[in-house]
Image: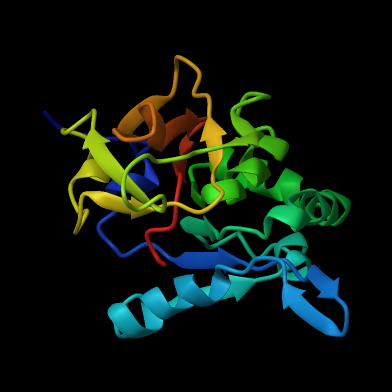
Length: 219
């Protein structure tokens, strides 16, 4: 057949590499005379790109001001690193006040992919990309076995691209929230030694998607 018009096509099927960004909140936590970055896993995520991938995938780091200024306009894949447990609500409030949460919703609805690790998933819920109660900050995942920080992955949807590239069947777990996926979400993998707690979840939103990973594959 002959195509005479332009057809809509999801960015997921684009032939050119997607552009990547990492969200960095400027919130810091003060303990005595010390200050700590609230999004503590930012360094681990950057090491993944700079060290493990050896710079093959370029990325940018966006703070609240950069996102509010339209920094997501040319981004295809946004990463939200894990946050210190004592700073999740503070970071969420800062992102709300600066308009970042609204920008995140628009980004995903228009076709972007948001990837959140551990309690970074709460940001997606606060942005109304997930149903209320999806991310339970009050209950943490607790693997059983000799190593309480080793979650054993059990793939539930082997045909999902999210199940194809794991280098190990374990996932580092550290005070990670329990997820309560709704029926429209895809549970790609679970933790076999933590009551089959959801470990990798995909949630379609508008033309885009949200990917949640309990644990810390970059650690």
